Image: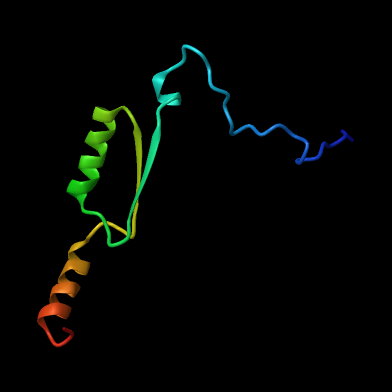
Length: 83
């Protein structure tokens, strides 16, 4: 039987110390962007392009990308009896 060590005393393995002269992606600033109403594919693409232009990691979050079914339901709601 081998002795077990406590998980609380183990060194975390998910953290990487910053290295000097390493890749630039490890030292890039991060921008978190959350859109409450949902984000379109073109807006996601713009965030991707801005990430390259600004040299920053842009992390996007949204309720969800629009789908044809959701779009149709919204049109029915606003033009039909729901609105």
